[in-house]
Every structure is written in C-alpha cells, then in structure tokens.
Image 1 (cartoon, rainbow, N blue to C red):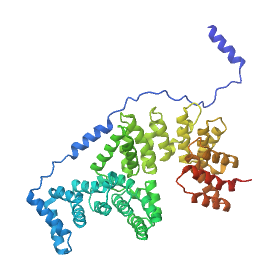
Image 2: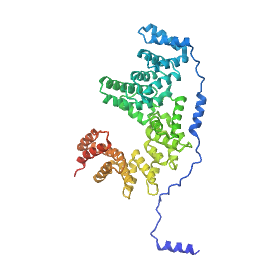
Image 3: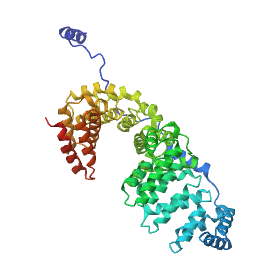
Image 4: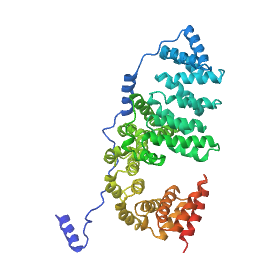
Length: 488
C-alpha cells in the first residue's frame, strides 16, 4: 500500500513525463528455434533414392576395340564414314561412355581422337556422358591443363545434351576458367539451360581480350543470346536477368539439378572455406528456381546452412523475390537475423521497410542496426529517408554513421549536404570503415548529380576511369577527383 502511494505521489510531481506514443520495442531475447530439422540431409536422401539407376553393363574387349576404331573414323576426313561411325556409337548406347571417357582423358591420344571422343559424348544424352565432359572441362581448375582447346570443345558439346544438372558445375568452371574461348562456350551453354550469369564474363572478354577474333566472338554471343531470349539488345537481357523477369522463367530445372544444389547446401554445414565460397558463388548465379530450395534451407538444423542460404538469397537479389515473405517471418531469428535483413533489402522486399526502420533504432544490437541500415539503402525507397535522417541526428558509432549516410544517398541523394558528402568521402579514405560502402554510395550520388550538372558529369567520368585493383590507391584517387566538385 505504501508502495502504491509513493508511486502516485511521484506521478503527481512529474505531470510532464508522458510515455512515447510509439515506444521502440526491446529486441527479442536469443532463443533456439523449435522448428529446425535436417532439411538438407533429408532432401538429399530422398532425391538420391529417387534418381538411383543401375550401372551400365561393362563393354567387352571386342566392343572396346570397336569403339577405338570408330573414334579413328570420326577423327578422319570422310564425312560419309563419320556419319556411319556416329550411328554405330549411338547404337551402343551408354555402354560405350567409359571407353569414350578414357580417350577423352588420354594425354597420349592424338588431338583429333580426343576431339572425336568429346563429339561422340555430346551425341550420347546420358548423365554419364555429361559427367565425362564436365569433368574434362573442370580439369582447368583442378590442375595444370595443356589441352585448353579440349576444354572449349567440351563446353560446346555439353550444350547438345538435356542434362541441365551440369549448370552448377559449369558455373564453377566459369569462375576459374582462364581461356576466353572456353569462357564464351561456357556462357553459351549456360544460356542453353536458361542461366545468363555468363553475360558478365562475355562483356569482359568483348572489352579486354587482346585478340580481335575473340572480342568479336563475345560480342556475337551477346547479340545472339539476347535475340534468342526475345530481347532487343544484350543490355536489356542483362537487366531482365538481374530482375528475374518472368520472360526468363521457363527454364528446365530437373530433379537431378535440384540434387546438385542440395549437395552444395550440405557443404555449407561442413565449414570448409573454399567449398563454402565456391558454393555461394554457384548458387548466387543460378536460375531463380533455386530460390525455394534456399528458402527451405532456412529451416535446416545447421546454423551455417541457414546463414549461407540467406547470403545466397541476398546475392540472387531480384531473382529471389519469392523469398521475401519467408525472410520477413525470420527477421528476428537470433542466429541469422543480420543476414536475413540484408537479404530483405537486396531482393528488394518493400513490405519489410517498417521492420527495417524499426531495427535501425538504438534498442537493437549494433550488427542488427548495421544490417537494417544497409538493407534500407539497398531497397532505396524515398519513404525511408526521414528515418535515416533521424538516425543521423543521433550519436552513432563511426561505421553505423557511414552506413546511414550511404543509405540516405540511395534513398534521397538530394538530401545530402556538401558537408555530409565530404564526410562520406572521409569515411571512404579513412581506413576505419569498409571503404566499399561509402565508395558505392558516392558513385550513386555522382550519378544523381550528373543528370543536371555538367561538372558532376565530368567528375563522374573521371571517377569511373580510375579502375586500379588496389582499393587503397583507387579510393584516394577517386577522393581527389571528387574534390574538384566539392571545392568551395
């Protein structure tokens, strides 16, 4: 009773102390989810059982000699005999694949015989023949390979098969391939299966290869891929791919290809750095039909599977739009919340804006505030700008302030003062925060200014001409270029 009287007295002495109309809720306490399960392992077991097939019958010594003779014929010049040889190899079916594979990998065989073996495998539409071609293509990544010409041939012949499960392997080969002719064929074959992640590589080859023939080959490939996909030019196709346009939705995605994706997800839980990095690269460049698998993996019992699945959804960006609703449900999942927030911004999932704004507030942990702020910047909605300005009026940690300024640029570039642009430039060169965040924001600010300011357009041109791979040299040089626009 005495306690109640004291409380009433204190309330009477402080009539002006009113509660906030919309107080920021305290962040949820960390908790272990009860709905986690071995999602990845279960799905792998199901698909392996479904796709299991008996091994092909071994070939006899007589058949092996026959296949060797047919390859010699294929390596010859007589087109009539070559047609007969191809027909005979097809009649042998999958049984001849091991012998053809042996010739493909035989460094002592002649170039013409090895090319003939690749051509023959490209006419046998079996998983085993596709695997042989893919393994030979992958030799360039695994060890020194003198037969570069053979990799290009294998990449070309894979496009003739219906084995779309090779896509993850092709994407990994694309990451490490050093021969630009092979790069062109890999990009073409990926497009055959509805994946246009090779466009970036084609643009690079078209600009940078010293050989005119290959530069023209890349340009031809870009034009043909755009035309075949129903777009007026390669840039339209590129943007459509990034957005995940419905026009590109009708692509094959077999159960075997799904199994390959689940196997990559399994590697995420084993925490070996190179396979994890390669796996994220591959799944982030896949067709948007991989999105439901990544969403399902968000419920796996292994924390690292969940984390890396969310990272892949972030990198898929527009192609993962279908993941938005589920990600928003997991916005407070204690072990992966920061990555979920980043993914929501990258998609972008606009219904998440209010949740993101809320999590920029001081009641939340710094890593959550950082991720929510960066996500708002990635989403780029003008309606987020007032909340970001409010945060900038508060006392913020250095990296959070830099992230808030960068996000404001994305949402309302016209709102930044010259002093704030200078501050962002200082964050870019200061070495105390990740320079990439302010650097990208300043690029976006220059693009905005350049639309109405000739001097800004000239600075933007100079800014983008500075492309040294040394990040420290680049940001210092870019800051100097920007100084010409910011000078009083």
